[in-house]
Length: 129
Image (cartoon, rainbow, N blue to C red; front, side, top):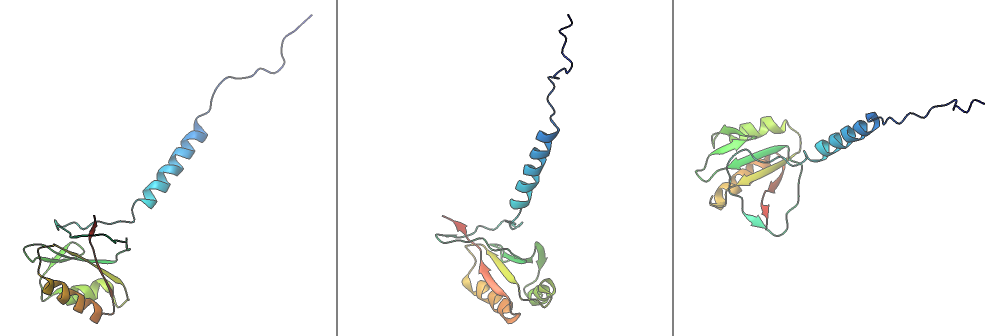
């Protein structure tokens, strides 16, 4: 009498589906984590209780030694309006102001005046408390 099994069960485990899931999770976290773009200049931001995250198109930074930059590109105070006009491209966008907390407020008003003259919304960046 022959009692052998006709179908043998293989005890191997396939990792291909597990790696697919890991790669999908990795892509998901990479895409969702890239929404906040920090300013590249060393700016000591003031703190605020109510802060929100805004998708920025144009970033204007003013350092403590009054150096202006638009999207990490240094510009002079006189060339600021031309640089903002180029970056906005005639669209209504959001200009994020990264201003050091030691900079006098007249510089903030100067940049905000230029941005509103170009029909852009102005957002002052602060770090949460």
